[in-house]
Length: 253
Image 1 (tube, rainbow, N blue to C red):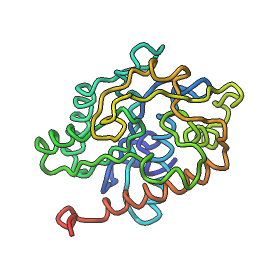
Image 2: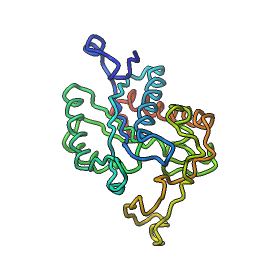
Image 3: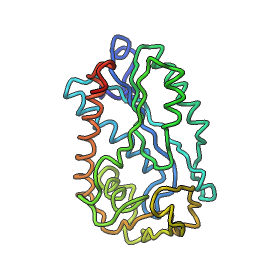
Image 4: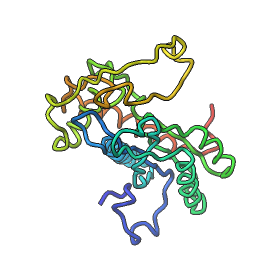
């Protein structure tokens, strides 16, 4: 039993415990090319949260990891079989209920550990922060914490070399042979403003990629995944620890 994982604990251990910060892993259930499981984002979210919390506990930070939310925003993938969509309005309602419990029970810091590019919690945090003024609400995208170029040959946007390497390390039995994987080639919007990054529109996934991947996975390895996982979780743990140990009145310098 890991004391920082809520789902593994019981009332005997929890009723007298106190925690400085709660972590809510948030993933998605969606196709990841031909070779990775639909639960890729969920696995990554929970494993990175758990290891980050373990390392934070070693630094004396009382972190509690909540069970992961398995569904994310997949509105652009509505025609991909069993890609489960949770609308942003539903996410807001779920998040509000979780925050209400934490606020009532005196855990006034929450970090959403996001594992899906389609999730965007910023506007929700603004709205809920106004409703729950005692709460410190934050989200972090673990996949933006570390430059992929330090570990991988090919940039990964979805089910490419990075994610494949991670799952080869974390859940190798769930990965089909890389010889069966698609090449992850993807089309881009033709508009210059979007290519430069100052305009945005949602991608229709099945018009962009033939195998649901965006990024070539074929040079992935468990060894790369292990090195990347350790680097990412050290950064995540540092963030957890800093938030846990810093009084809210000292957040700004």
